[in-house]
Length: 68
Image (cartoon, rainbow, N blue to C red; front, side, top):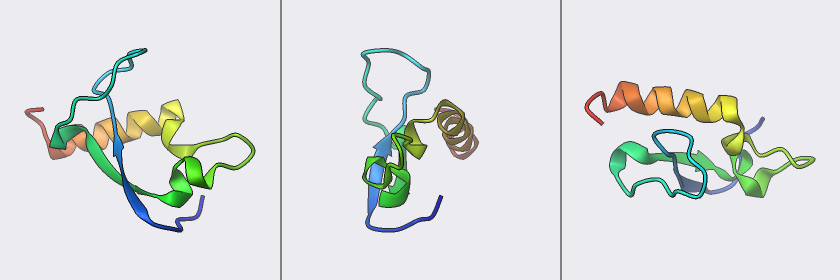
């Protein structure tokens, strides 16, 4: 997918949990563009909510914040 639009903050949960919000901590935040958020949704697909992409983001955050 192509990046476009404004950057925004996405909250990512440490583990997949229904009905729970991500903790408001730096090790749970990533910056994404409109193209990879709901604004850039194509045919119902949202990049940032795809399970495989969320796991990649979690791995990235664990690498940045190993103690978190």
